[in-house]
Image 1 (cartoon, rainbow, N blue to C red):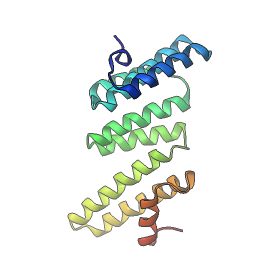
Image 2: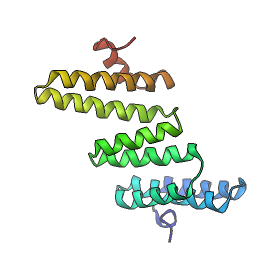
Image 3: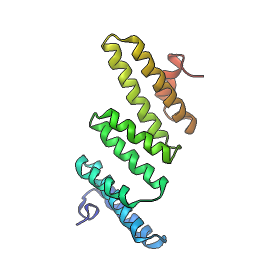
Length: 168
C-alpha cells in the first residue's frame, strides 16, 4: 500500500487528496504519475523521519521523472536528508545537482551556505583561521545568491553578511 494511503497526518492526507485530484485533471503520462507518487511518498516518509524509506522513494522517482525542474526538487530533498544525517559532502553534491537543473532554488543556496558556514566554524575550533575564512567566503557567496533570488528572505544571513562586511 502506498505510504500516502496509510499516513495519519491531516496535512499529508489533505495534500495527497489534492495531489490525486490534480493528477486526474492535468494531462500527464503514467510515468509522470508514477514518479509523482514516489515523490509524494518520499516527502511523507521524510516528514516522519524515515529517511531510508524516503531515499528509496526519491531514487525511484528520479528513475522515472524526466522533467529537469521536477528532478531538481527531488535532488534537493535528497540533499536535505543527507544534511539531516550530517553527510554534508553528499548533501552539497545533491544541492549542486538540483541547481544545475533549476538555478532558481534559493533554499538550495541557503542550505549550501549553512553547510559552508558550519565548516568555517569547525575550522575556527581547530585553529585554522585561513581555512575558516575560505569557508565563510563561500557561505557568503551562496547566501548572496539566495538573497538575490528572494529579497527579504534570509534576514539572519543578510545581517551576517553586513556584520562580517561580506555584503556588496
